[in-house]
Length: 205
Ligand SMILES: Nc1ncnc2c1ncn2[C@@H]1O[C@H](COP(=O)(O)OP(=O)(O)OP(=O)(O)O)[C@@H](O)[C@H]1O
Ligand SMILES: Nc1ccn([C@@H]2O[C@H](COP(=O)(O)O)[C@@H](O)[C@H]2O)c(=O)n1
Image (tube, rainbow, N blue to C red; front, side, top):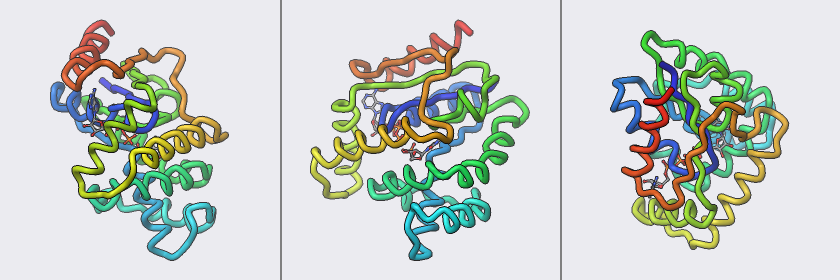
């Protein structure tokens, strides 16, 4: 069983993906971490995230086993990741490893922006997770505060809006719901209610 979760920034798809993977005993890949790791590698080289050659080289050499989630989770890396993710050569370099992960025996859970549309168009279940930008920003703001990052709420909201706009408007694998995805709006749902709704969708497949 392959379960694909997509959606805009901080919609809760990663939280749901982890819980769904735990429920069904499936491996989980947070594909956003791949783009964050490429962005980190580009910045570590002293290059700009818009530098196509540098980003493609980092993506081609990415060691997935060495991803350090704590180092990749901050707001600055989300923005840089969104910029490298718009580069077709970066997406091409990360394609096979995502496909291979999804093809594991027994299946997998993947979350990102293009899982249902590009990486796993034949996924067993596709869920497109949304929430209003304000609610997503509030959740992300609280999360960043919890991590000790000092950032204003207005900046978190602006980052989310900017990233969503860039991710949705790029030509390479833009953020979009697959035609056969189930929409899950978590605006008024807490984590458990969203999880139960997702389990209902999966159960009806
Ligand atoms: N339904 C919910 N109610 C309240 N808080 C939530 C809900 N879902 C997720 N959260 C919280 O919102 C924050 C963002 O969630 P999460 O990281 O799962 O989003 P995401 O869509 O994977 O984000 P990104 O695309 O930026 O990686 C987290 O702090 C998480 O605990
Ligand atoms: N399948 C994906 C996943 C992510 N991206 C890009 O990476 C940025 C960071 O992702 P998070 O999920 O960790 O927030 C995101 O803004 C996208 O630009 C992607 O393009 N495709």
